[in-house]
Structures are given as structure tokens and as C-alpha cells.
Length: 218
Image (cartoon, rainbow, N blue to C red; front, side, top):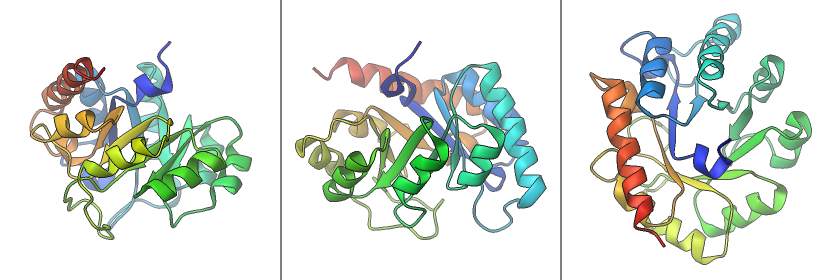
């Protein structure tokens, strides 16, 4: 069984608004290409609500179970608890880490951080992994913070944060190697897989980049 650090290698994030094709087909193709963990992030204009959101979450959850990869829900802690998701990912503006941990028990808890100070706090309060970014410019998030570059990962590692971490924000096949070289355990991405003509091939290429660059880190 893979450790969480290994499962974070290729972290695919997606909701219905990120899909030019049915979300379930994109997710299945992405997993076949090498996706190791999936986050359901249903946000933005035109995103599903209520029972429709729950229905899609359960559909995607079944696919993840079928391929034995963790199914994480972004922000919606109540939905995650209701359908028995493998974990939750929260941002700095979402519910407090301690409260989320209380609700989800020993499920996976990921926290978005933007600097070493937030990373230390998240580690102290019991996060299981950190999402660091935005590393590069991205159009997927409307409320984007200042782009930090791969250097922020090095800064967090220099602060002796040992939690598994993934870089997120504007990562694609052209710059993914920089994120791993900086000390990330994996890369999290949306459009570099979901909006591509061949999601499976895109995922495969990205997974290869992660694996190859991890070999060079001693």
C-alpha cells in the first residue's frame, strides 16, 4: 500500500466547471494515465449545488474506489462526512483546522498554505499534507494570491516542515520539474489534465516527469 507521500505524486483536482467532457470520463482517463489521488473541487460560476453536487461527488467517488485511489473533497466538510470521502482539503479562509479534524476523525486532511508560517501552523494543528501555491500564474482560481514560484517550497522545506507537500497553481508539463526539484512530493493540477484533448496521455506525461525528477533528488 502506498504512503500518503507517494499518493500525492500526481494530484488531479476537478469539478464539473473544469470539464469539456463528462467529468467521470475525464477522471477515469486521468487515473488510467497515472493520477494517484483525486480532489473533487466544485466551485465557480455554474457549479453544481445540493443534490446534483452530491450525486456527482458519489459518481466520482465510485471511480476512485474502483481504482483504489483516495477521494478528497475540497472545502465541503459536511458532504465529505456524509458520503464517507477519504479526506478533505481546506484553504486558509475555510473552516478552522481543529474543527475540521474533529468532524472527519482520522481521514486525510490537506491544507492550502502560502508561506512557511502558515505551513508551521498547519503542521502544528494536525494537517496530513500541505498544498503550496500558487506556484505559477493560473486562471482556474478567481481569488488567486500572489504567485510565489517554486522558491516557496524550498523555504517551507528550509523551515524543517516534514509534512508531505504538493505544489499547485499553473503547473504543466513545461514547469512541473521545477516543482519537484524544489522539494515537493507531488504536483496538483486541474486544466493541465482536464482541458487537454487526451487527459490520459497528459496525465501519463506529467506522472513520468514527477517520477523522473524524484530520482534525481537525494
